[in-house]
Length: 179
Image 1 (cartoon, one colour):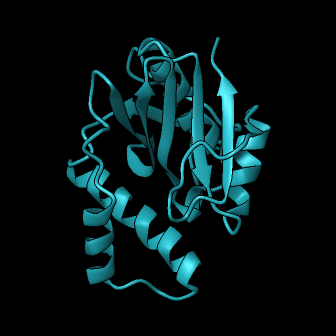
Image 2 (cartoon, rainbow, N blue to C red):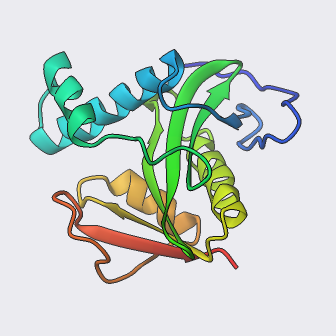
């Protein structure tokens, strides 16, 4: 995918990426058409890698029901969409676990845009949102097979920590101090 740079972004947004790509990441309700398409793509991607096969539409529907996103709304949560030239290609969410701890979830960059700075742009905006919510640290869990995600988190200053939850698919836990 040939990605052209966005030279401007609306006030209050952040952009990031190499000279060939510029990301605009903004808050967006998780149930808009673009956000829904990205959440479905996220679920199909992670489930497909886990099951080592293509995921059906019905399985994606069920996955979204089994793992709802209602906690990703202000004031204790946020969902964001990342775009290049107005095209929605990434998403992510953050929610408070307690007064000082936030958790990242649904971090996804469309494979056509991987390697263009989208993951870092998402994390920058989500971490800033966590700070604005009063979080002093942000945590996340992920799986062993999501090696690219684990590498992104390590590059962005996250360190592996002991398990803080017992999620059915959690195999690695990360944390980053925000203060």
